[in-house]
Image (cartoon, rainbow, N blue to C red; front, side, top):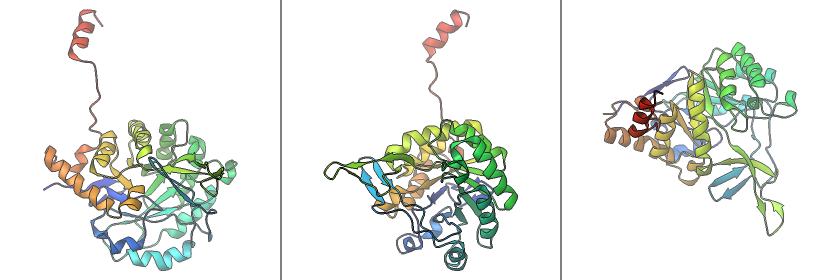
Length: 316
């Protein structure tokens, strides 16, 4: 029997599979057994009521989907009074995703949302920072350090920080998150992109640009997970294009301890359960007693024996 349990970011999960924020809601309980998930990650909560971006908000692409939802939210009071009680009936820990336009806003929201039933906070710092001309906090190590430090001072709950792939050096950003108190990082959110309708000459999203997710982004995010795993000691959650067990295994081998499934759930609502089952099958087939043994087990493709012999003869 394979032990699927993993330790990450101050939590022990029954398995490493959870939803990506914004792709999961209570209605899925009619389709899958929620108790089979490693954790819950809620739709991102903001303090204020938010209507979200103009329609259309979603556009299909050849390798995934574009979205520009705009984080519609019913606010923190609704989350505490309505959303949280629903999830308390299940066993997986609940991770509350939060967003705010300023570092102080993040801190106050983290303090307010840290009530009984919330196991950890996922700070979505890949959202616009009004104090930095609208650039995402996670685009620079400096802004990341500032917001994470404020968050860490505001809550004693495990603090997970969601990074953006739209940055020059994501490993430096991950280091800044770790140095200022993050317990784990999620790598990563969607990649900025756009699409145009050639019949109407109009953008296919109401806000013109949006975030690309799905299979097309997996090689990019996988590379970023690998880079972050070499840069930090805290846990990494891989998120980007995961649709089956092999996708999850790739992320674990690259250094992730857990994974989040997003776009695949829109295509197949049972995708997360499929990933759990296929991870179990993979470990059985390859003789792994624990899924945690896969984390960071990537074998680098080094020089072949002939090349090694040549270098030794040359005195290198």
